[in-house]
Image (cartoon, rainbow, N blue to C red; front, side):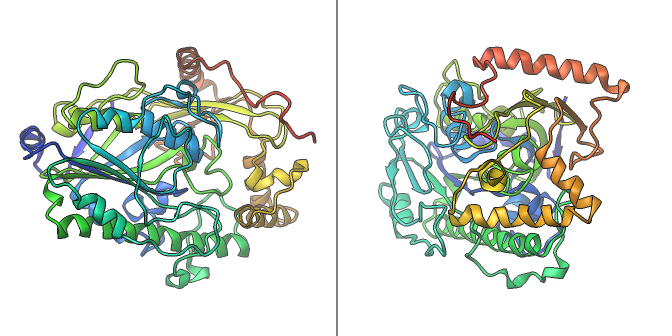
Length: 466
């Protein structure tokens, strides 16, 4: 069982605080774009200056160390967050895929409880009938644009203050730190002093783009600070729940698009009025956010959601939540078909790769290996990183290992995250862990059946040929 670590003596007061808010609370959810949790200071980043506002919120609120997306791709991650359903049940199990028509999202769920529900910035969800957010102007929505303009906070401020008698839920959806990483001030970090993730090949291109990625994280951090300042300015902070999420991992090798921890593990910080100062290692997933909002808004969590409310944990009524978190990956149209499913109990992580004989391919990284031509600027940036790894791999065994770790996935990958957080020692063939592997494999099979997941890897006829 996962336990909760208390940093201040608040649990005995939490229930009273949650239930004694003056009115149904407002919700402000700040959602980043392609940030790996370990790039933030409060999650152990070795690079300073990335996230002072987020770190401050972490000190004051609740920090989840085992929050996960079910699929480390933008559209599926957002669909899960907004519907409380995991990818194969909401229908969005591949990027740019629509959610099943008739699905109820956070908009309908909270409007029924008397809320205004708005969104500013990146959407990347469809159809509108499922996601009829009130569009709040001011934040750029195109995550692929070059040198994006800064945001205009007038629309956000107006939405927050428009009707003091009606509670609101606002999603502030940033485009940072999505490639092409050409916004922000990267001069805070010296190239030769950067600490790269251990699974990276160390090349000049990697350092250059990783520094620019950190600069965009700082832009998202600034947005977190600005949103909180607006709430305080208008006296809304005492009755507003603030949630910060970093979406799926960075759009670099072994992050976004994969079931590696650097892709599926998410930062999650919650500032609840009158509650704060604890870190929890309970296993949780993005689908848990919607039922939490519903219950906090004094609604009844509907049956049939994959998510479970976190409110009992926040109230201090329990130290347990989920036993397992599950993950899926369904390949896009480049390269040979490749699908993967995974599970973790917070310590052990099993990846079950459905087509291990095929090389792994991602359009934005190595799709060119399979004749997939795309000249979009974000893709070119990411590909430069991977290309530099390939070149270094010709003379460097560590770089060769990094390349093969990304491209070649055996059928089973088992890791002990407590000892190997970067997933570099595969225990799947170790007889000491045979029982653990079998137990987790059976859990994946049961989950796939529950989800109606038949192991789909790619739409028929859509694969590029090698």
